[in-house]
Image 1 (cartoon, one colour):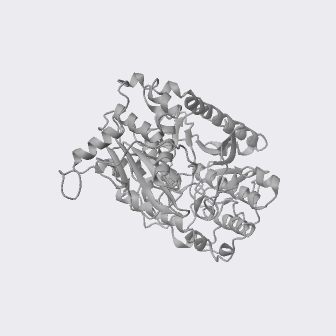
Image 2 (cartoon, one colour):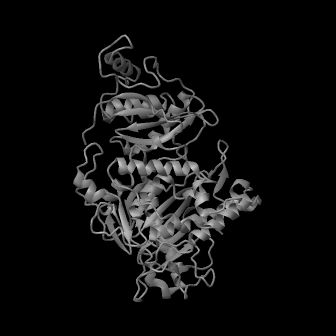
Image 3 (cartoon, rainbow, N blue to C red):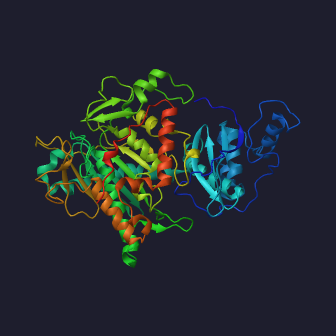
Length: 552
């Protein structure tokens, strides 16, 4: 790969609010001074014109930057990096920011350190490292120096194991990846086998599988599960009791939201043993709860999601030079209707038809990796929840390049435009072993099942009808409304608001109003959809207002 020469840049976005990666720590990570940087300003861009009366020349800036971060003369090649620079960094002789600049000179990558916010609540500053256009996690601090150091530390955590000459010094990174790739499919297989052992008559529903897995020090465990492959054939519901999209990933994600609601109720119970079991903790710097340290989530799917993720492997996305036909025909946003998928630019789909249309599963995953999997209602209580990896157990898939393009590259660079706590979380995407149930049963192709940690039985939903089936082990009532429907989510939202003593939320009259009141989430969503449109990927489908305009 051809890399551009080093360019040192201090950059400020001017945005009133920046993004915060939810794993970022406010602790000071180094008390050592940075190298002298008197020639670098906080909002610095290498000038493109000769010196004027307004300031020094391009040559002066470049020379100051070069002198400030010149690597040790003994370091003459990449082969000597592990013995010199890495040891000095690990021993605390070189701080994270200096180490990054030394690596940039040796590996000749383009390095920027961008300020993603001014002072924010609590008088914190936030910066992120950008390497060859790829934005890393945001670091925060009580001053700019500390925030830059934190951002450099976070970037190095992800960068170092990927650099030639350094990979062998980070076996723990490879071991963790390999461990997850092995443990997650096994956890999904165990959970599926357990569920189906007492519900074998629904084994034909388990063709397309998605699951959310929690990883802790104890290992990996499935906490939410879903199957399915259809949208409802019904028209838009005004009652909130019809499930419009029953694709496996969407079903698993709504089951995951039930998991999050359950753990919020445990936290707000103020009962010591339940609070201990909850995945949430109080964040000292925010009114929102955050995940406890050491907890991460992964998403498993046994089929490549429908939509642009199935882009041909030969396509290579360069954000600066994407031809129109590539955008229009390959990596655009896609619509899903009754199990079929169409590009938003397609003329084959009749937009005037009175059918319920959803965005494709691929596009929804793209959205969740920016806005979080918790959705608008839960964002009143918790920071965005992202998955660390997406594991694809599709035996018929040999290439995941399309998935990587859609989930990460289509929205690369959006983080600096997002409100606080939101970012593009670039997941690791890997192919793993397939998990499937062999079944001779037929006639259930439109059915899907869902389950969440704590459920005593699974629920079977007819994807075309959008309701629970008569033979489902779990039924919420005679109306057969699914426990995944919007009305059920609004009910859980009100239970949590009551336990959290959020009087501002208890008086909310409708589902749509509760969503609109989640202002940071709505702002992030607005930024995302505008960004996708500006990049040429098309317009995000706006759902009919009637879908959310209901009360309980």
